Amino acid sequence: MADKWVLAGEISVWARASVATLRSDPELAEKQAKMAISLQKKARLKKPYELKLLFCRRCKRFSPPSERSTTRLRNGYIVRRCAECGAASRTGYVRQRDKA
Ligand SMILES: [Zn+2]
Image (cartoon, rainbow, N blue to C red; front, top):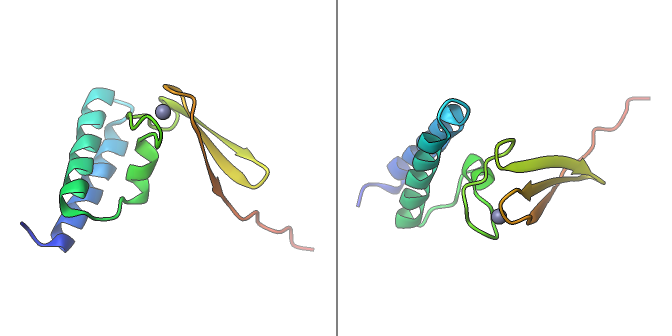
């Protein structure tokens, strides 16, 4: 198997390519994202952030933001809701304090 560093780079290249083609060709974007996932599983590496956003954590389906999932800000959390199964995933964020 190829070096893990090389594979880590390749995974993020596939993930970013998927994000770039999302608007013009969603089917191709899904294939690219699945390519990234298969490499990530094979190499047992951590998922890059872009790749985490592209799949639902519950149903494991391809649900990119603005296409098949919604993103809302609520009480200091980023809430992403999958349009396929309705699962919500929350990530905290720190609000910027107003300068006095
Ligand atoms: Zn889902």
